[in-house]
Image (cartoon, rainbow, N blue to C red; front, side):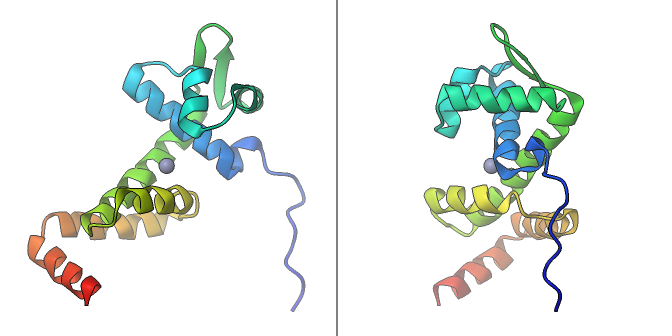
Length: 149
Ligand code: ZN
């Protein structure tokens, strides 16, 4: 077997998991408060403001957002698309796991990892299962009983 091919170019900041987390947080903050400030992004991600500013400047340079020192962060269409997609995966995964009674801490930890590694097709499968379960209390109850067994 030949060795796995290495990527020739380094990924842009927005292709990394960390960048996806930033765009997700910024998207959520804008949804909740109408704006996203560095101080809030830092608090939500548990990262220093200096690190946040460095990543924000990188994402600005790559066209994912616009950063103005005194006005905070605004997402471009491209940045919004990434932030929305991750937030949507987060929501589907959280609802699915929570419906089985998994504790919030475990759900949060697992979802934060899984949301970055999912194809469109897998998301679609999980969304269909979620919708089915949310409309079928009997099936959900049956599955939960099997979990405990
Ligand atoms: Zn998330």
